[in-house]
Image 1 (cartoon, rainbow, N blue to C red):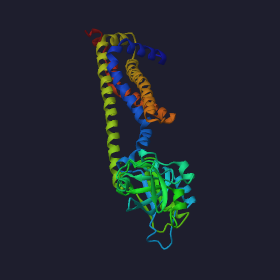
Image 2: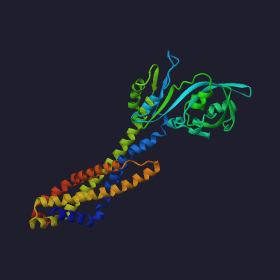
Image 3: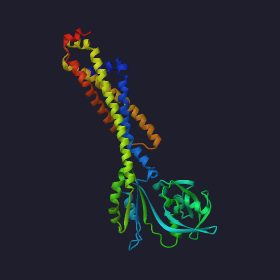
Image 4: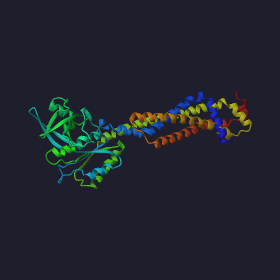
Length: 391
């Protein structure tokens, strides 16, 4: 039998018995759709999830600083060092900062606190937001404006309330307008600090401000280890690494990776179970088809059909069944991919979709052959006389 005739007969049989095959097709289609979605969207979902990891410990943020209290010569991060770090593979963004002591007198009370000079990227890198008011941005930084953001605890200690947006605060005998209250803070030190634009602090804070702190955010948690290992070498190639410290939340990172691994494992386990159920379904319906068409098989053999022709026909039907399910699953997977892309605001590369599609069709072919092989062999080995007499 020619290949195109074989395919036509197989497709006709599948369409004719579509009600019998519907459950099997849907099971395999859902497995294919889930597999394509996981392959296509897993990295985009991971990247999106990493945006908010500071809420559970900031495991993708690496803190780099020079301990100038123990250094013979003060160190700070040079421009060429920052550029080199930003070009490291796996680095998303970084923020430069400096720290000075600050004090204020309000209603006769003196308050001492930490003043952090930060650039416009600091809030994004650390996943901070404005609890009240707004956080200063590039305009205030490049404009060297006298504004500040207060930690919630510092605002409460100084003013007795957090409703302080628009008020004026004196820091080291300089007046600053409070633009916002910092939200998203899990560190008590940050909650008791004042934040100034880096350029403003360099102009107005007394003494030399050393930009000796750097916060670096990685693209995903998988990039943290390799980036942390590369940092000392990169910095050392551009300036002295004396008293350089690289801090990573290794314990938090390990917990997040374990949680992600188990979630991914369970997803793949569910998809595998769907494929297995689909395979069992193909085996059952093909066995039922062989039984119901026993006389047909006998007549075909009596008319000259060889064992290999019968084997090819039933195996082709199993492949058509799994192929149809894979096509339906590909369509569902594409729809799910588009919906998830809209939900997370990110679109994966098309090559990932085609990779998932190719793998899914490969699994479908293996599934069709594996599940349909025994029923096909059974059909091809039937005795002609017994098959014709079958009732």
